[in-house]
Length: 160
Image (cartoon, rainbow, N blue to C red; front, side, top):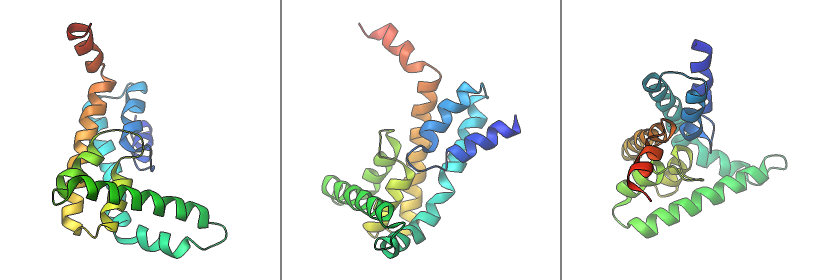
């Protein structure tokens, strides 16, 4: 069982997959949901300070390198677009916008992209970490509810 927890911990650290993929995997492995939720959140949050402090600098450095240039340019574009999108929609409510951007589990959103976008917007470190953490908690709750079939039950009762 420890091996399975380690697997979901690692999955939750992978960009673009994060805990959005790790929580359903935990349920496919038939792991208890609450410990899985906690482990996935921890795994998803570990890269956040590293991304905030170093990712933008690394991507800018690597964008013109032969082997890694393409992937660096891809993530620079993704971070820039996400930052611009957040800024245009949020204005001064950037904290809430970042929280929701990370928290609503859609393709291309999440802790990695949100943190990178925050670094492009020059948000303060503490503000970024808190907004991303709250967003990860929200995304985890949504994915947990979906993995447990709660959405299906609600639609079955109320939807027609």
